[in-house]
Length: 455
Image (cartoon, rainbow, N blue to C red; front, side, top):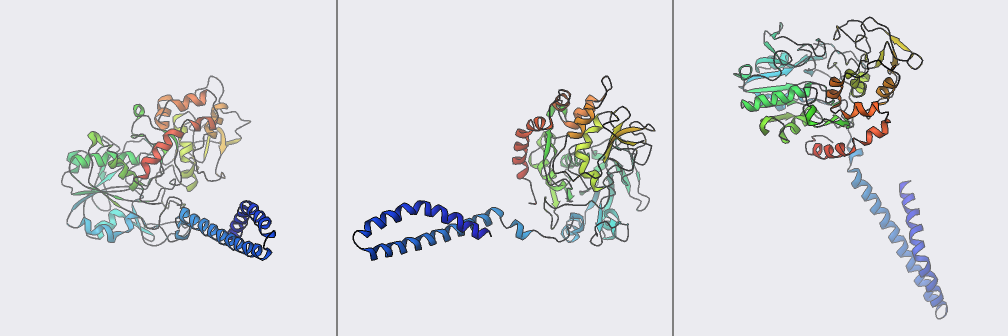
C-alpha cells in the first residue's frame, strides 16, 4: 500500500511538471515529423517511470533510515536484569571485600515471570545477598535505604542499624542517624554494589541514596557497581524541574519530576555531570540489562516500597505523589495507595468515592486516620504517558474556602519549585502550566541523551 501511494504521488507530481513539455513537443513535431513526436513521447514516458521508481526507492530508503530498524529489531525476549547477569560481574568481585546497598527488590530471578503470577522467594527468586554468599563472594556488610532492608518501614520513618537474622551480616541504615555512609562504615570494603528497583520519579528517595553512596565512595576511593533494573516510568520525561534553591533529599539535582532513566543511566549522569560534592567522580561500573528499551512496558514483580503495591500505583505515583505536599490523602492507610485520593472536606457532589484511612503496614499514621474521606477512585484510569495535574487542580478547586490545602514547604520540595503552587492557586489550566516546563524539559533531554544505555 505504501509503494502504491508513493507511485501515485510521484506520478501526479511528475505529470504536473512534464505535461507542458509534452504539449510543446507535440506542437513542434506535428509540424515536421509525427513519428519523431511519438518517439520523443515514448522516451519522456520512460523517463517518467524511471523517476517515479527512483522516488519510491528513495522514500522507502528514507523511511527505513528514520526507523533505524527499530521496529524490526524490537525483541519480545524477557528482560534480563543486571543482577541476573552473574557471568558479567562475578569475575569483578573475586577476591574483594564487598558491601551492598539493597532492599526487598534486590533479587536474582530463577525463571521468567508469567504475567499475573505471584512470586515466592525460593521458588521464583533468591535475594542478591543470599546469592552472592552462596556464590562465594566475600560479602561483608549490607546498607539499607528508606523503608529498610525488608522494605516494611513507613515513608519518612527512621530505620535503625541491625543484623540480618538469616545471614548474620551487619545492616547499616542509610535512613537513620545518617544518610551518607561514613568513612568508618565503609572501612575495609573494596567495592560497594547498589541494586534497588527505582520508579523513575525525582522525589522517590532511592536516587538520593545512590548519590550519597557514590559521593562517599568517591571520597574514600571505593568503586561502585550498579546492577541496572528497568524503569517502569521510563517511557516519558515530564514535570517541573528542580530549582537549585529547593534541593533536598526529595530531589538533589536540577532534573524534571519524571526523568525517564534507569538507575544505571542515572548513576552515569550523576558522575558525568559532576554533581557530587566538589565535582569529584567515583569509579563506576554499571551492569546493564539485556532486552530492555525505554518503550517496553515493565511490570514490577516485587513492590518497591510499602505504598506502591501495584503497577497502577507506580504509574499514577508521579501525578498523585504531589498530594504528599498537601492535606489530601493519596490512599495511604488503605489497600489502594496512590490509586485513590480524598479528604473529609472535599465537595461530596464532585467526589463521590468514600473510604476511611486506617493504620496499616507502611502507613501507621495516614492523613485523616479513621475519618471518612470523599474523593476519587483512579484504579480504572488508562495508564499515563505524562504527568497529570488534573486531579490536584480538581481537588484544590473543590476545597472549601478557608480550609488549608497546601503544606507549602513540603509541596515545594516535592514539586521542586514554588511556581507550581502559585500557578494552581491562580487558576491556571493544566496546559498553561505545562507550557512553563517546556524549555527546561528540552534542555534536560539533551543532557540525558549523553548517558542513555538503552534506546
